[in-house]
Image: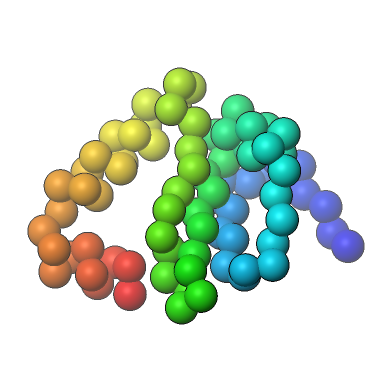
Amino acid sequence: MYLRPIEDVRCLLVDHHSVHLTVPLLNKLAESNVSVVFCNERHIPTSMLFDLESNGMQSKYIRGQLACQEPLKKRIWK
């Protein structure tokens, strides 16, 4: 198994129903500015976890994505 330091990770994509993550791990990921994206059974992203306190850039990106027109949002998620 290859282990990577949390500091080297920007985003964790969880795309399987049997993945188990602990709250301490999720907190550590958030504190380290690692976004966690959860996908449904069709492999479509359905939710995202990110640190609200320490990273203003991520919330800026999210606001920008929310402001996009619906056709662009559908293409991006596809």
